[in-house]
Length: 591
Image (cartoon, rainbow, N blue to C red; front, side, top):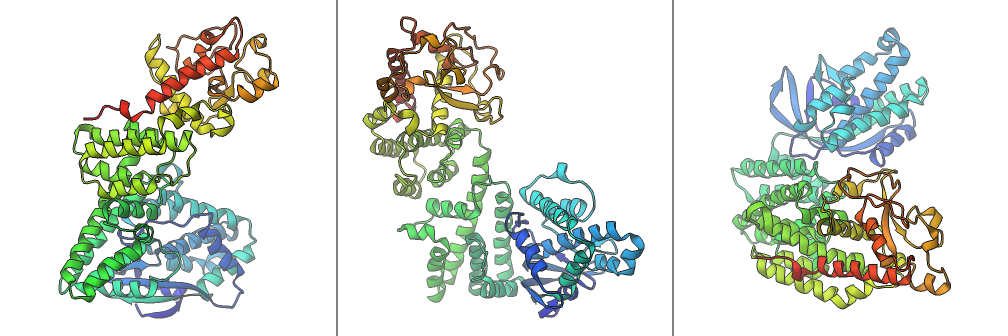
């Protein structure tokens, strides 16, 4: 393929098949950002005026597929894929409106041959995990909604739906204009090379400063480029090793929770496994890697540079695998951390602890999770400390951890006691305005754990309330924090007999109504047992029955037929006593 600027029609025309290598990221464009921009750019393009879409880098293979040249897309795979999806959707819409004869008369059947399929040979092969889906449900008209197995497949399917909905609203004349704009007046700049080494060189020197590259992509490019510079005759072997590792990294990334980005994962890895000396090292990982490798190559220490690249890329791949395994972990400690939803400061230590734990069932890792859960609840939930509180110490602990868990447990205990002394922890739980001070999700978490404590310690003993039940957000069963004594008792569904309320005077409203002892959680529908039929429901004269021991126990705090200040104080003391034991690192059983 000749290098230089060419129209899209010229790029796609001819007997060639484009293929996206597995070491590239999966399809990533979505309907909230890139797809609307892509469509808007074409719509705003004046008919007859050229539009430049960008640079695309290809690597030609020394092979043919049923008479077609196979060309790898080294850079530009998102644009190539989107162009084909758009043209497929546009041609489908025109075929529906024009009918077979007019469709052929306008030469649109030839456009299919150019962009979509030539003699039943697809013009693009996606990465291998997504290719079957791409061929069957994007390029064909099969309904693929029930067969999506990866986030990238969901984005591919969403892109087709996005374009179909947008194009269906446009008149036929405008659709034909869009085809002309894209087919005949949109240009790209192409580089086509023969081998991986040359592709690496061009990608690094032309795209490293381009917009839109993530830190992970920049590091991949830099590692391959420096490998190219530092290696002799066997450069392709070294480059292939890096490509294979990034193939695995991108496949692991596809299974990540959407809340964990690739650049965050990269940063967590650097915190845990690199010997950084300043936070700028892990905050700017691209510069950190450059500053490690460039001096080695510049001073002629190419073997050391290659050793660093090999070690870093191998460990990075392992970290992405561990992060994926963490998200699938059923460790109770880790699941509790997920429920608290403040994992950012803990991921480096969690990653390293998981990797170094050789105990049965990852018991030491689970203990680390429990220490961090105590830290998260006491420091962030109850104390409402800033999200970066203790972060330097946590990151340093991750960097320095070498596999000895007992000193790590001691270090975490010290950290908890430093940032949340028992005195402050207890005072915050006793705070008279606890309800207004706390986030509702943190109060729900506290009562979830208190509910399960009651289920395991008070007769009749019964199964714990599961995470699934706790997190259930359906309207009927969603758990909310409610006051027991309130200014509007008739609206709460907690109190059965309003005559038990104390006098709602100014002193009570200021000093007692928002205290911990006057709070409970309640489902939107108190009649939903959620499978807890093994809990004995009390048909109280004072409170409406509920499928939770947290509410069933309220009767025991009634004093002289009243839910009084004394009731609130007594119940508060019981819950606080539970909290001081449940979230105390000294109570954890360590080896």
